[in-house]
Amino acid sequence: MIIKPIKTEQDYEQAMKRLEIIFDAKKGSREGDELEILGILIENYENEHFPIGFPDPVEAIKFRMEQLGYDQSDLDKVIGLKSKTSEILSRKKKLTLDIIRQLHDKLNIPTDVLIQAY
Image 1 (cartoon, rainbow, N blue to C red):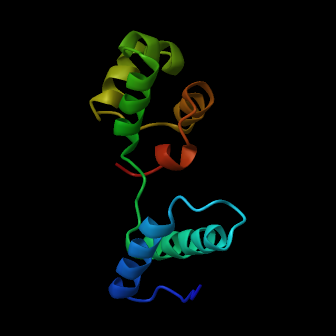
Image 2 (cartoon, helix red, strand yellow):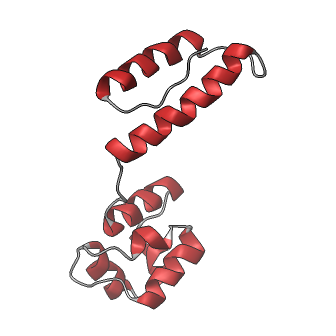
Image 3 (tube, one colour):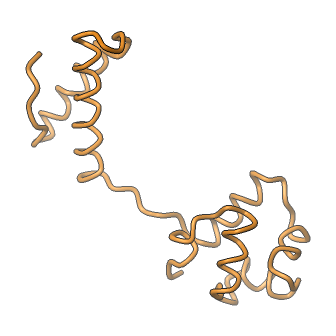
């Protein structure tokens, strides 16, 4: 087992090839340990070189509504006013701190997503 930092695209490609080979290794085995370490190295490289940002707040609300099977009237109950809900979903009105709290508490949408500028 030769483990080294992933510094280049070539290192990354080699690590991914090795990961495919040892993917089904048993935990606690020599290859299982290698798999665990290699996974951490790959994850660190990907986080640094291929960061994934947060989704747009309005799109996150719509996505969560879809997941929960909610329609706009269900969201009205969370936000409080039908007119506000419509304006938020059409991007005519920004999310307020109170609405962000309600969406977080009742729909479990992360506040980090909801506080972004849009």
